Length: 92
Image (cartoon, rainbow, N blue to C red):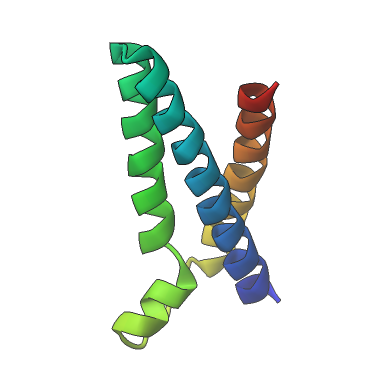
């Protein structure tokens, strides 16, 4: 059960970060300020983090067992809700 929660929230994080990255790149093309460039880099780094912490990535590189899976699932869930709030604020 925890694995499925971890997988779904991590995939949700990846999609939300792709959406935010797209919005920030569009804003950077319009404004071209250091702040919007920082937002692009912020979203890009978080996107790489989400991709590399995704259970699908672990399955692709080989068998992976983690004793801290409940903590990863919880952290991924908090990140998911934080990204939903950030996406809501950015699209308002």
